[in-house]
Length: 220
Ligand code: SF4
Image 1 (spheres, rainbow, N blue to C red):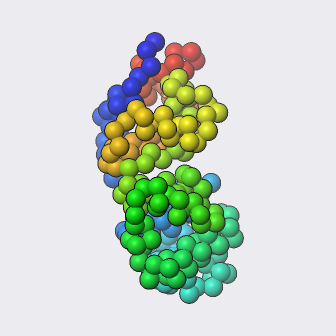
Image 2: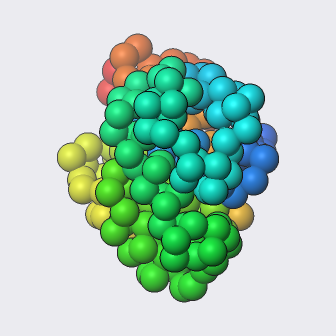
Image 3: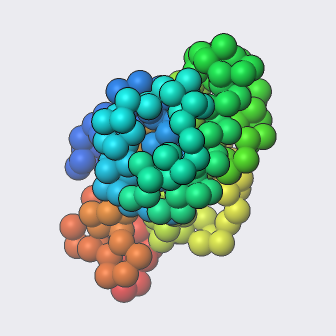
């Protein structure tokens, strides 16, 4: 079986699931907060934390900067790892307030490499979180890799399941045009496929829009 092109994969996913309209947030700072909170937890848990932060009226860099660690931990408890995540958020808020006059757009300003490195320099922010912020926050074209991406790409036969983050990202960016809208939608669609069909156990290959192009579907 010939390997599918990533463009074809994207087309099939979009046809099946439609536009996902990511990232679900009212503004860029909320998007960044969500990207930190969603580390190692389901989005439904993050939604509870975001609602609590909004209810407490602290969803701004300045308000988070002024908030006590312990108060923040209570508000984001539903997202798990709340001590580590509160430190990460407090640091982000402090840097934005101290070095960028509280302006999120300034913090995320510059070329792709500079913004990505600035984010990676912050404690608690790894490649996936940084790339989410680069793509969905700064609006710059970078391909986000997550567990769903690795699983789907490896099952399709495109990459080894143990391929490193940067290898998966490089593969995608070498096979797709550098287009923010495309990367935005593609990542969201892969997440949807991973939840609906390409689950870690008992994938629903019979319902998958990629099943005619997937090596794993034919070997089950
Ligand atoms: S056909 Fe099955 S294994 Fe292949 S991508 Fe779809 S759900 Fe995953």
